[in-house]
Amino acid sequence: MRFKDIYSENFLSLKEAIVRTVAYFDMFDYALTSFEIWQNLSKKNQLMEVVDALEQGVEVLESRNGFYFLAGRGLTVETRLARYTATDRKFKRALALMKIYKFIPWLKMVAMGNLMGAHNLREESDIDLFIVTQAKRIWLTRFFCVLVAKVLGLRPSQGRSRDKICLSFFVSVEQMDLSGLMLNNSPHPLLSGGQIKSPLPPLLKGANKADIYFIHWLANLTPIYDPPGVYEKFILANSWLRDYLPNWQSRLVSPRRNGGSARPEFYGEMIDLFIGGLESWFKKQQLKLLPEELRGLKNLDTRVVMNGQIIKLHANDRREEYREKYLEKMDGLL
Image (tube, rainbow, N blue to C red; front, side):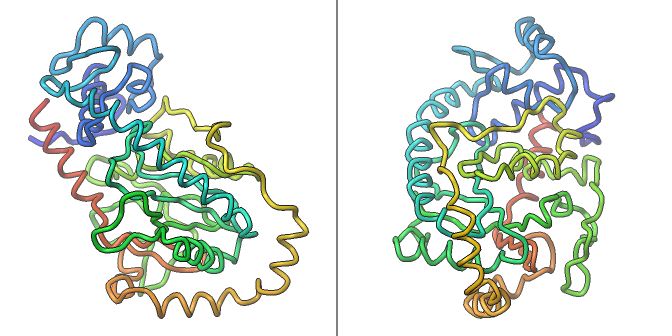
């Protein structure tokens, strides 16, 4: 019978929780250290308890050079090491882009996304940026972000995505709590009649509702530009994340991966004085230019969400696929 409660702390033994964590990252060919297992564990434990359990041996797991993986999946260690170089190159490209992006006055935070584990981006993958904007300036921010990337030839196209910049997720500082974007098996309460409801609904828990990909996507966001300290507020707004990953610790901007300081405040005020009032006009123009596929999915569910606080353009949203794949994997292991 399918396991009923992925995130029930009382139900899981420590070793079962360890297996579940390793199995999830195995879907992305990523072997884990003991510290990473502890951070991504769905069960509240001390780090040394996890280390002791791993040293005693966990059925269906093997280890090599300090990394743990499912039995017979030792190649994930080599894959992890090989992807370090590709990921490092993508970070450098994103940081180079930030030298221009920080002239966009309404930009408050930029983070690299889709990192299922540190330095775990495929050679051929694009660069997903998650962007937080000033209130009531989300469409203006998106316009200039897309324009700069387009001019520099960094936008992905059919058959060409390697190291390109994907700009499909923006949120305003007004709406940094993303719990309402979690998958749900019933019609999503966030949406009604094509309109967004506010505030977002409370977090939905339980195995068949837990959006495991979104949980780990959010936990692995890596900030590269955060001069006003918005990332800390963003994590506070999503404190529900620790209901699922109680040992998780937020990430600070790395000194070697820091997009730099913001432009002086008066610079932003001057730019906003001239074109800040055109937010609604820029929104209309961008909606006209969006592909028909995205416009057709607008606010039907959590794949494509567009309003004044959130722009999420994921027509090919694979979260349900990953959840089913993970549950099937766990059925086989446990």
